[in-house]
Image 1 (tube, chains in turn brown, orange):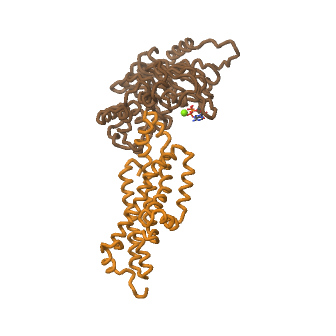
Image 2 (spheres, helix red, strand yellow; image 1 turned 90 degrees about the vertical axis):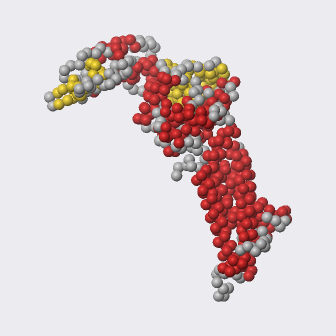
Image 3 (cartoon, rainbow over the protein chains, first blue to last red; image 1 turned 180 degrees about the vertical axis):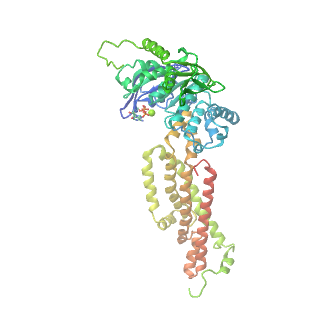
Length: 350
Length: 220
Ligand SMILES: Nc1ncnc2c1ncn2[C@@H]1O[C@H](COP(=O)(O)OP(=O)(O)OP(=O)(O)O)[C@@H](O)[C@H]1O
Ligand SMILES: [Mg+2]
């Protein structure tokens, strides 16, 4: 666990980058620091591995003040990933990944074997190992950055906007990859981003910071979307909060009905379309075992008849969800998760 | 020079290797020594001085200014002043040329170190490199391309400046220019020019080769 205890950072020029920050980043979970540019996210992150020392307060790593630990030793036990990947241009990919094992004094063979293992783990071809960083795409470099941070199996991982320099499609796949890795590895991750959607997708807990380095709100993503504490957080969360929080409700509880005869399938049972006079009409699918209510709603909206098609892992139809059935769960959900507004002149948009 | 040919090959043949200090081979040899030692010494001195200037930025400007003043001094004047200090030896040429090399190499070392992207340096810190290890394993290797570029300039200019030393009796191939001039005889002059140029081209070629071998990690 990482604990900030009344941490303040004042730079030499007087800028207060972080102001009396107290929070806990629990072991084995992803804690996201999110906020507008200049709100002190990077500064906060770097106080964990002592690239920056706090002016006041303490940062504790499993109860120990990080300032009691010699910086190089501390840092070898904390993985660090940054936006431009920060790979060493003069070292081959395999040696970039093996950096910390080398620093820890592993022999070359073992360090390289470990590096190869990690390259595979982050989904990179072994053939890339002998290349230099300039021979890789931005997305590949970012994966190498993640592999390098994980090489010595550190319990803690710090990530500073690691995916913000790549295009949206690559970013989404890197995010999915991180979630997949995390479900295996259960590292204590502190992840910095200015992208609230990324924060909500990745965070077990999200800490929203405001300019001046103060904590505005810290909560799980669904709670954050439902109950922003003030206008700043509400505005930062942006539009469509109601729809977006559906992403956190599993679709497994919706009522499935048997597929009607006008849903045409192939021999394996995979959907082809809805029968109509002129041919087939479009359809939308979701997987109730894996997807959220948002995906189910989306699938319903894609079909002309407003009916979502439920499929299994292999894409075979297992039933359909009518608009009435969706209405039912959405209504239940809204009733359960909406609280009365405070009586004081609070903005009723919330 | 009348109907004398530009180059008299038999003269070259006779004077190639007479065993005397004014044979072409001996002059070439002393030229090489007087041109390369200053670059070598310059590099050895520029590394610590450049590192210090990159580390303490306020040192950089004064260092560069002093070096630029040194560089602007006419070489012949410096050689003559040096005579008083070092007498009539190769050192009279080697010492000033070392300063000329320094004037090129210190900025090269500093530029090399400061050209390293900040995120690379930061990530080395974050990985847990100690400062010394970071310097040796990350910063110096990454400074190599810029330092080598400076080394090419320093080497070629050192090769050409040695000849000036001939005016005080220590100029390697430069002796051939004076000899040819005094005797109104073009062959030694041509030999001196061609040998100097060849030397510069070969030295530069070797440095380019070194650059290829040392930095396979650079974008082609
Ligand atoms: N070395 C420094 N000296 C003085 N002020 C600094 C220094 N580094 C950062 N700051 C200031 O501290 C504040 C917080 O900076 P920080 O880099 O932590 O922000 P950030 O949230 O990471 O922003 P971004 O999203 O743009 O990366 C900013 O106002 C910044 O200008
Ligand atoms: Mg930042």
